[in-house]
Image (cartoon, rainbow, N blue to C red; front, side, top):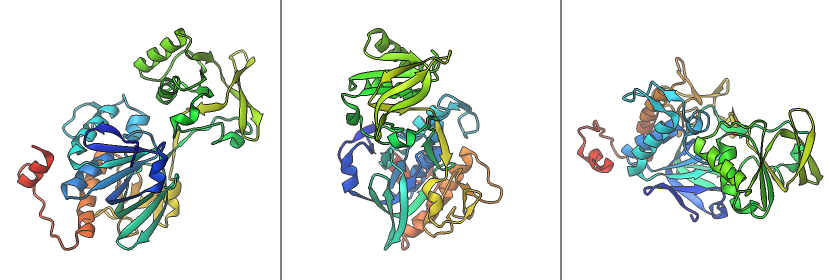
Length: 361
């Protein structure tokens, strides 16, 4: 695949903004749906038993809820780490899985799944195809979906002039862009798209932000240099026709309105979590969660596993450390599927010379 970027030299990532992905079939041992902490640790556990992993996530970066919802929130119940932030945990997990050289595909959602000889075929929302011997669903509470602004008629503009996800930065070159929001996503895309835009306006209801201080400072510097505009206000209406936007109408605190010329609106108002397409795959459910056994954490369909918050079994605890335990047992069962004739002799990682070599210690 082209368009590679790198988290670390050994971890190759692919992004949905690269159209070449759509024409290729990814073949792997295990596909992991979800790049949150449990999905990342599953890469490690699978790697210990010689299983190659390809990870898919609808977000544009790894970490799931830890990265998107509480990157700076302290976590106190990770064994061996008295204190770690969500972002810090993700960084450590990415470092831990480097020896196993996983591949990542961001900004895409798995839409369909079918059984084929030797495993499964999965298709993504951008036309990509993945073939794997086992499937591991580690999607937390489900897939992330963007919160939509409550604007009348916004549906006619979606994916034409209104975008909740940036899949190709080049698509915004030379456009009049309005970005609405005050979190990390809004600030990050303001900084990334500013050099490409004909004109870029950041719209937020107040002059305070929920983003990294460095990003806020860089944004304010661009405003001071008159390279972008910043407006106080909230989205009020859209003007245009046939899905082609001409103007964003914003409303001030005093209820007065003003227009901003715009070809594209990118509203970043946070995310909601829904079960998504997984709920249509015929897997046994219990209140929007996938029912699994506690020996293998396999779903009602052999070869499809579910770990982390998305699964259900009696006594289930929605804890990251519980998901780590589930990933360990899942990997043993996955090995029996992928290597049916190979007996797994699993030793402690502190005593196995083969594992120590694999981990580079």
